[in-house]
Length: 288
Length: 245
Image (cartoon, rainbow over all chains, first blue to last red; front, side, top):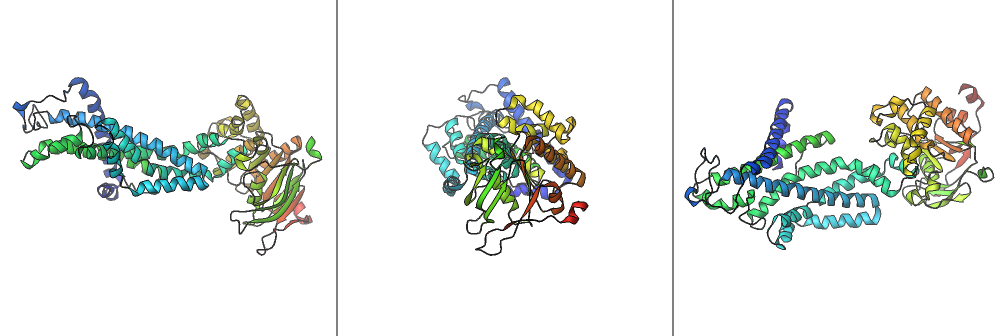
């Protein structure tokens, strides 16, 4: 995934990049608008089926066609995006809060506590996180919150590393010495001088994690471990459309797939621009 | 003042550094009386800054004691009692690194007051300090990246004086500054010292400046061999330097 994205800024520097940023912003705004407005205008009964209209090709009445039980693919895509964004944002925030707390504590404490925490992070990192996530969802009934927990609890490791490194570099600066000499408590140094220094990085990590978390939600649902099967989610839709794809009905697979890929790439591309602004030395390497 | 009988700052056979096997300072002793100004000279890398940090209770030495006003240091960094930590004001060599980039100069100067629960009097005291170091109101609202090194160092001196320290440690305070700012800041520090009776430890490599500025100067010699102690000898005043300055 990252290879495709890297090719963008490397080739077309000036105008190409500006165009890409504008297109990404437009996609994100359009998706947010659709996700917030469509449910107000077009309510969806997730259980309703319409066998008379099953597997209709895209038309004016159904721009994305209908699926194998006659449900409108466009409407379900929008509702699926809503679930995906909810899971993605909440899971990314959970992971970032945990990661920032662990990383900042390890970096600020230093010494043995730091080494112990970071070895623990290494141990967790050595287990593939999708596998760990599957363990977590498998313990609960299918639903949104187990998926959020599964993604949030497995994705704080990289944030913890980033935040710790940042805290370590800030900690040795003279302005921290000046604060200590000025009578600041440990808490004050951490909250007033260290945390504001790491927040831009942590915020960036959170935004970069949103698309990643959305993909995880879809992957878990696709494996049948995520959301209940009637729930309109992008992963569920792609999963249930697999059979019809082989029969030549491409729309129930293609449109949810595009809904998954295009907005996540748009978010990732905007986050990449932000990263370059914070840290111009590193070319955007996106965590998808 | 009670400090007249007891020296304001006393380092007693201090050994310190960053690797226990190869400390930068070995067995260094130095006494600064209340109201006295001592210049500490030495080539770069000889441990001047380390000594300054030890004196400010910011770096834990491997051996030796530091006494402030006769009282042994109760700890280092956060473990030092707040009253002892704030009794020593520190000015660092590079104002860019010594200033939190997110604070305005006014917040920077007020930081020690707020950290010690004296935020209520901050506005008044900041105005006072800013005037003393020569910072205008328009500069106080700016952040470090919007001011020059000299202006930022003025703010850092104001911050070091905010809690009226009994000992002032200036670690190469003027190394990054032009001559007129150097003169202005030395005047600010001297003014404070004369009015408050605080002790001053001025660290630097500019012999001419320190000899003019301080009552006496001592030099920190480089470590000759693994067994030698760090030599601290007093520097006789060169008569030519006094007139040249």
